[in-house]
Structures are given as C-alpha cells and as structure tokens.
Image 1: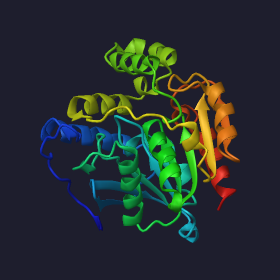
Image 2 (image 1 turned 90 degrees about the vertical axis):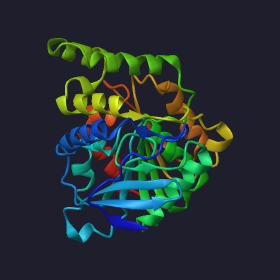
Image 3 (image 1 turned 120 degrees about the vertical axis):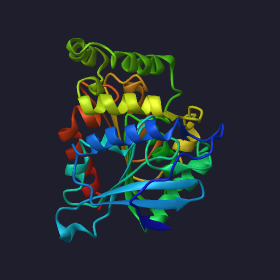
Image 4 (image 1 turned 135 degrees about the vertical axis):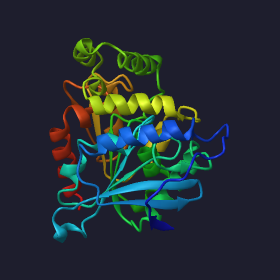
Length: 309
C-alpha cells in the first residue's frame, strides 16, 4: 500500500529488537536537521509512505528533470547505518537529471520510516526491500547502497534479485566482518564533532570525515545520535558461496583508505567470485567516496547504469 503523506507517526512502543526515538521532541529536532541537509540536494518531488510487513517505509522521489526520461529504469538509493536518506544530497541532482530516483529511509535507522518488526536477519531484510519496491510499483531498478546499505543491496542481489537491473556498492558492508578499526573511526569521528570549529578542518582531513566541515551534516549526525536508538546486531558478511550465486550486474566502488574493508583484497576477490563484476578503488577517500568525490562517482554510476539500460 502506497500513499502520499503529510505527517509522521509518533514514537512507536519500545521493543528490544526494534529501533526507536527517545522522545518526540528530539525526533522533531532531528527531522529539522535532516530537512536542512535535504535542502542541499535536488528538489524533492514527492514523499511517500509504503506499508510492508515490517512497518512503514518513508520514501523520497526525485526527477527526472527531462519528462521524456520518466520511463527509464529508476535508481533506488539505500543509505548507511545511523543516518537517513538525506546523506544522498551530493548525488540526487546528478542521478535524477535523466532518471527517476527514489531514496528509502531504512526501518531501524533514524529517519521518517516506522519500524514495527526487526529486519536485521538476511531473509527478512530481503523481504522488506522487495515489499518496499513492490509497494512503489517498481519491477526493475538500479539499486545503490552505501556502507550498511551496501550490505542490504548485496544481500538483495543474493536472495531476491528479481527486480534488480543492477547493483552498485559504495564502500559496502557485507564483504568482510566489521573490524575494531572501523568502530574506532566511528567513535573518533563522533567525538570530533564536539571539537572547536578551528580544529574541525584538520580533524576532517585526518579522519577523512566530511561531516565535520559541513555544518548541516554535523548537526544532523549529532541530533540523530541523541534522538534515536538503533536495535540490531552488526550484519555478518556474505560467504564466498553466497557471493558466487550473484548474477545481477554489479559495480563495486571502494575508498583507498577505507577502514570498513581491505580495498585491494576486495577489488580482486569480488570480480573473481561474481561474474563480470566491475570493481575499482578511488584515491583520496575513505568510507564516503560518493560524498568526497560526488561528481566523479555520480558520472561513473550513471555510465554503468546506461550500459545496462
């Protein structure tokens, strides 16, 4: 079921395995911070709610700017953990210039979706995403995921690939077990958001963390940490036998200084396991190539999608 929405539902009853907002006041403050980030991207054409077995998924619709391109295969973007669809602000304008673009707020992360059942188990995650795409009336999509969203996309390509024209993975989860070095970077980055303004550019360069020098992003991340409680375990990576089942055209983009995966290991491993997969390493970036090098990554994603249709 899909409907246009004007308001959001209040905080759901707390469950140990379902994400929740601490209270409505902090939630609303976070939403205001998100809206400031959305304003830096392409204009939102519509906001939609899609009902699934796991709750209500909030969706943002963009473009295309050329009406003749309305029938082109759409792009669906799945964000990383601890944030919402606003993280795609550097990408929505370019991607929606000649294709419809949808961004999903993943249930269980801070955003305008409302989680009622857990989706962290791989089959349930794939069912949720398939139901969300079906609710939007999308039978064929280019699916793009970053970080935890990359795990969701990779898992979809393995378990429920029927609606997928292609998948693009941006420094994704799902390829390796998440190590302590990544969690250390997350905590250091969060701590650095409290640093004096004069120090933030140096810390941003050292941590390769653009959140520190984009005021709207910094405000959004800090508000989200205060407002929302994530209730899911870290997902396990797919095994080699699982990766070997994937036949959907796949494009893997890794930051050279990624702390989530070992880039040189995966740029060799993934094309070996997944037939015809493309994989590349982007210089001068870590975990956010689509933010640090938005123009370059947008062009490469679109070129990859254009080669498929």
